[in-house]
Length: 175
Ligand SMILES: [Zn+2]
Image (cartoon, rainbow, N blue to C red; front, side):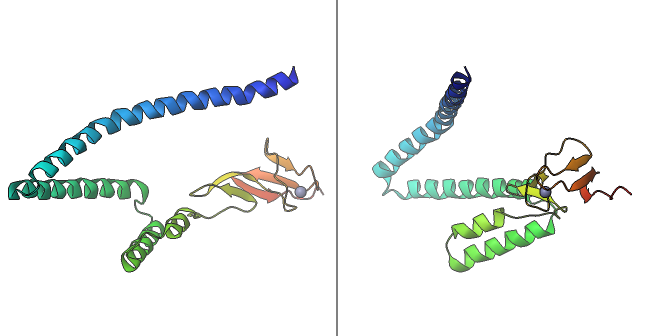
């Protein structure tokens, strides 16, 4: 019975993943198909009338519109993700200068800029993710603590802690 339960969990997960992927593919096709058809029509027009100066003019006009749309989206994205955080602005500038200077997108610069601890980390906090978020607490002996209430005891070394207002401290020795 236990073995059956163990087997059925991954199957349920795989089924759920399959449904999600099918939905994602359908959404993707719905979004991509119209643009794809438009590009096909434009490409056919370009091949057919590419020598005419007016069609080159049309393509230059479309280019300007596309640049405007990309700039608008970039400004929105910057407002949403960077906002007023000076540290994030400094990293944004560093990545921008590096990209312009090297005239290439160095992938590790982007990964490094994303994998940051943008805020102070409390003592004993276990931070995971990108940007880093507090997901739990670690004992000084290196074991993850099971935090259920305010009073926490390490199950390995029996050190006592108190969790109060988002800060974990050693418990005062009972005296
Ligand atoms: Zn411990």
